[in-house]
Image 1 (tube, protein in one colour):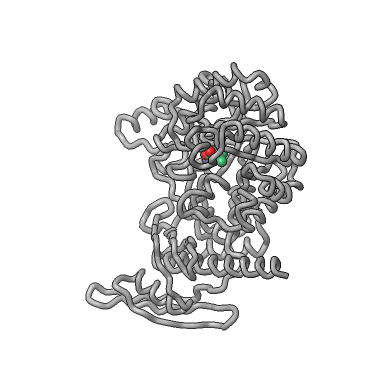
Image 2: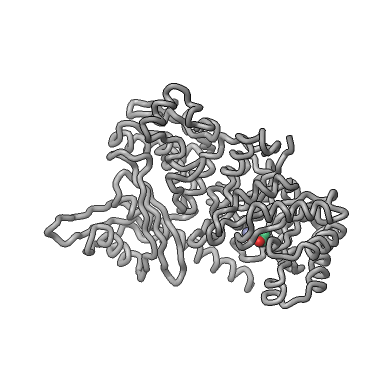
Length: 515
Ligand code: KIV
Ligand code: ZN
């Protein structure tokens, strides 16, 4: 059985998804979860791209010790120097340097000849190798590159010190047959290929990212790059959970497996979905809400007689618990704590107290509190904003089919005390947002608003995601509450707090740089 290394790029390529904007605390939380999942390598960001990315890559490199942490760099010395500063204290410093190799990228984007590209790639790998024990080199747009040229440049960068060679299908153009040929060709035509691990990295523009990844593995790739829930640039990247489960369930066919702790998949997926605001479609393989739902009578009958008639793997394999009702209003603090620790809680006593209170409030309104409810409360309490400039204290909405909807809101503003305001709107949510806009000194543009229920049922928790533009900056926010209007208000306030924190961080950085 071959061991396939999993290189997770949720925090780099995944974070490049349109509308996704994770902050420092959120990235750290996802990194810790990826470590629990057991990924071999996690790409924590692109350190030279911004101060924020540098800070989070550095914090992740200093915190995560069970996975190798890496950062992306262009083939320029400054990017490599900055990546070294961010990654030098990681358990196994590793850099990911890339340069495009396809005719279209070399001619129009890089404006370099193929010889110049080889020289630049070799120089950057040598420069990186003087600092990093592990150097991964990527041939951007490899799937549209000429195979003999790829063979030449790969041989040269391996001689220069690269230990992993990644061959991305950057634009999601290739097919399983073609990518298989590419990996086979390079395995057979690069003389020093045994000194490096070949890696595959696929985008999903034609919906073939997972199939292409598996075909590459069958033809020599020893590392697969992917993201949780398949998030990423444009149509996304190959989805980690689909590759991991496909390899595990079809070991007979692939003769390969990852070392992942598969039962952490569901939690990883839920965390990434909550923190990025990218909702997982219910029909999504492995982690969608319907992935184990049997609707047709014939299927239900079959499953009752023998699960394997229609179920090729159990929900438990990927951490989906069949016993979803976990606690009720009579559950005590001890049972509660045990449950949330089981769900991955490792926060402070204060956070535990906050979640317990939120649980008790919810249990008063909702008969059965499920694991998903607890997970939502836990995420809200433990991955909040570093500073809450505005806190919702009270919300009242008057709505009637023949009235003008009016919202009255009280906010707690630590620097000012309590403030109150009221405004109208053409609907309840608009009335709330018009009121908040006055209170925080708008204007605020609402670019996106999405709502979903956790688990379903008429007493379900509501989860709202918003994307706003405030102070010239785009930001996202999320809010969970038993009531949809309260969840809507919380999501908006969360987005505002995030913007203010980011502005404060940037101002502080400018001050330091100018000092
Ligand atoms: O898709 C791609 O080519 C990339 C590279 C930077 C590896 O993400
Ligand atoms: Zn990519």
